[in-house]
Image: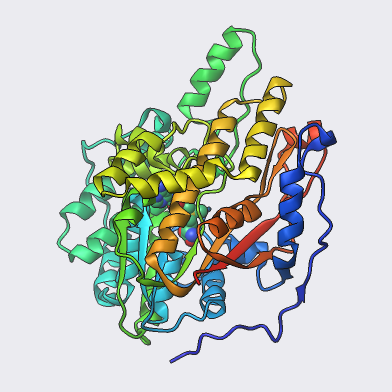
Length: 498
Ligand SMILES: C[S@@+](CC[C@H](N)C(=O)[O-])C[C@H]1O[C@@H](n2cnc3c(N)ncnc32)[C@H](O)[C@@H]1O
């Protein structure tokens, strides 16, 4: 069996500059608590070229066997997970957890090494992605080749079934493309094939939606091509009102569903044929569907040897909007509003979740723990300083969306509940690795890595290390225009349960 070893002999490791930078632009707000924390934790910082932006993002997965099947912009790479498994000393036969599993990079990599794993994920398209990738060793290659031949040689009959659009996805496809998409979807549902192959065909269709559409995922938004009917109508109205038209993007010529499907299926057949030559040692992975805030408290304590995860960043990106096409395709309908509210608060639209969370802890007979955890957050001096600073900035008119105030407070409050549960479900000696970005709002820097570490420490974790990426993160043009440029850390924090 391959050995999980760290390539540290070739890695360049540096201690980054420990001199703390200002946190509050122009010194407008108090920053004492953030400065104190920065000095206290400076010794944890380590910069290593093992973790590049490419590895910490999905970029490195784009060419990876299996991981590239379904693109997940917000994912990290298999290479990162492999490095972290070695760093945390996780061995085959042990069990790890990823409470924000996304496209399930952690679980798939665990599977490759014979490591057991549990994942939690809220969004249904991620579950479909997991199911079809986890089946990689089960597919019958001959059957897949036969399906390829059928798709090459036949044209699916038209269907009256229409794409189950959400309001925000209307007119996302050229009309012919939408008809072709539904014809294939219907055809695959009817064809004589194994359940695994059928699911794979549906997942491939889901994975090519963006490619064949007038949209492009762009972090916070779904950007639209000017050719979409929705943009054309909006521009007619704007012109009538004497306004300039919206430019929109131009994606050039779009592939047909058949072309895109065959390209994806070819890749899958190639990967499956390779993977099945050398299956990994047997192990068990499970992905639980729902919110980590509700699933973690119900898990048995002391069961995991490690955690490798990346929560949504506090950057206002709304996954239910960026993945609206995929969610619509899976017939999510109005449930999308509920999913949006269940997400860890990372958008300005998220409403507070404390009341239902308290009821939930009470139902588990754990209300005292709920109160204790909440008290830890509410008395955290760094979070209080940040909340106060954002309120002052708001009074000064520097906050362009007031929802940011609640979002930041809720983000750390909810994360503290997650950290408390991670502490409970981890075994003594287990390590937790968390990938996250620092953020800046209205000229106030929010050190997500150190504040998370600080909250985790109050819950009982020992801070071990904060790996920082050599390439830091820039700011939005709005922030830079008003408050100048202030590079922000992208980090991997490592804690240990004593
Ligand atoms: C940064 S992504 C993780 C990506 C993952 N590491 C990968 O490689 O694909 C964060 C994930 O957390 C999920 N998420 C957000 N809120 C959640 C919640 N309350 N419970 C469970 N998952 C949640 C999002 O849907 C998203 O897939």
